[in-house]
Length: 281
Image (cartoon, rainbow, N blue to C red; front, side):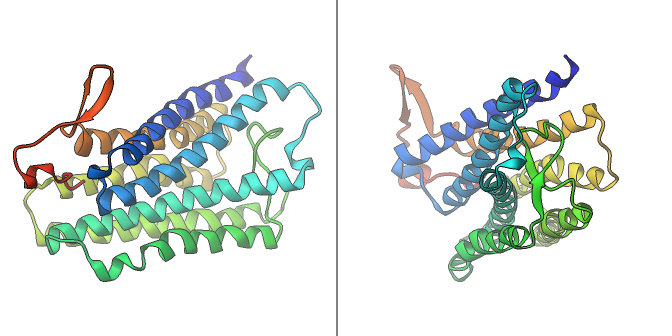
């Protein structure tokens, strides 16, 4: 019975994130007036959070039914490699897009407007760099069976003698670099504007979510802790990141722009054009 604790917790938390991410995506698609540059960046983070949470949900749900069978995901190379690739790619992409968001918020504080020059590089940074990093482990055969829920879970191959090195190079270090970059941006933002603005507060929150869900677990995993309690926390935090990002964005940028009337969401009409613009997140 104890082996069911991890998948059940992961299913509940990842399902919560899936619903939350789906809500934000629905809002983006339904209300054209609410779309601005920062909402578009947020959408990238939410989509990649959704991909990872769907993988977590599928892993855990499948494990509940297959744990007593002879099924092994690692024996199906295409499925295992695909799952590993999209897990790494979605995590790295959401992390890079979080850094892009923080960079965008920084310029909203510094210049009072978006940096049009840098925006042209956002897709290449947000999609291209994580794609390159995620493909290399396929080439060197670093992906494979992972624990826990090893029957349905693929990531970096625990049976590979270089698994810790591969995980460090292609997963931990890129995340840590983005985190350190964000810290530098935060320090610069504080030096420019010491007033506690909404944009500066959002920088703190998004960096905090990244730290709690990815940075702290990755640091702890370096020490090889494999207890059930820790792995439940690790997977649980990964499953929650979509919910946390969706909740914070909805709370800060959508709560005063939408209302639920007559069984449907409607946009509130403001008195002037300035009030109609989506608040900086």
